[in-house]
Length: 400
Image (cartoon, rainbow, N blue to C red):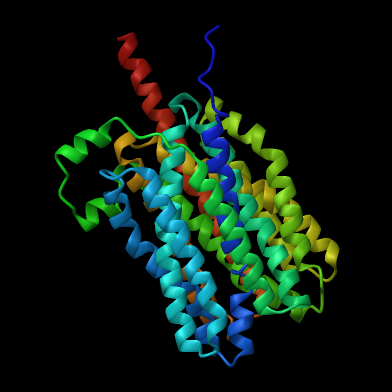
């Protein structure tokens, strides 16, 4: 039996830890900026723009970074992105003018788009192609934990201490991330030297879209749109319901996502993404409805656990699916498109749900968002059925 290529190298571990602390540093701010903007006099529209301006900047920067990754070594780009994230985080406490904070948020979004694209591409370089599902599953775990456990820490700090304390902890985590990323020894793709000798021409659209990966990226957008309601409104929902356990949602979310990850990564490599994503979409749909009915803290625990299994397993599976559809040399562009779909989904949901929120309750927003996961199920099912038809046709051709 042939031995599998190694996955858990020192470089991969350091990159994974650096990415984990990057996401923790950033994600602990995410659910707290909307209530902070509201507390200093921001309007309902400005609260939504906190998420939207960030997403626009991240999406605009990624095509340029995806193109630069074709010709530049990984380490310099990764460290620049990590440093820019630190600088942007430091800026927040220096003003309480909402318009200026929105400008800072736009700059933060550009730095985030830069950093996530370079980090994700470096992971693809380090992971053996035969273990991409498992490897990106573990790399995705660093993303999922950051997206899930960090907000609970951030909510606790914001509610019990101050916004400045929250920023200080975020900066410290960002410094730890920078150190891990600086110590990582990065792999460079074989195509890098060729591209340096003959740099490819830049096209914004060509660097924004990787057609081969478009379908899983579309499904990622639906997934992120559904998650956007939680990012923007979970803390406000807890305040409306007079419940103090919103952090429990994120905590159990992270725990269940971590426990399920070894199984889901291997399932992806063995069976492909379809059945895994469809099952997770149904679990996430149920979790959203349980959350919408929360009248006690145990609802947060149960919905968080289910959402961790559902959404927490879908995100790395979708990234692995996106990467598996493209060529190695365009993995940076595919990664950028994947992350942009997440930012665009969350950002667009903040605006659209902000409009709906004028007429319906926060609980209803969660219920409406849940149907995005049914769309995830449907689109994945359609692709699965199309694949089965193609496989049958190939088999028929071989027999004849």
